[in-house]
Amino acid sequence: MPQIIPIRDLKNTAEISEKCRLADAPIFVTKNGYGDMVIMSLKRYEDSLAKLDVYARIEAAESQITRGRVVAAEASLKKLRAKRHV
Image (cartoon, rainbow, N blue to C red):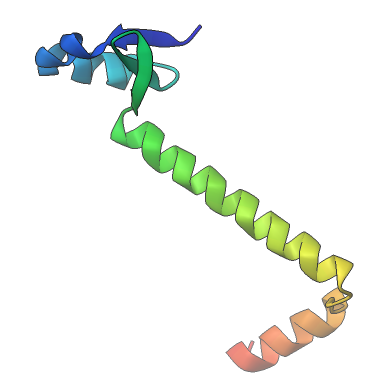
């Protein structure tokens, strides 16, 4: 279940920092009863960025496959070995 806190609770920065570090999900901050911000730990943020990067790479690869821009594995490995002198 998502954690929701009012903006006034942000005054206690040490407590909020600890909540963010221990939370399994981002914490939603409300202002006057409406959603205003989302806060999370730096680690969770970096993990989210890494996931988005993986998803973008998968999407790009699928797009290349759809357009027929593929190379046989053997040819690709041969090219890499020649480039790296392996």
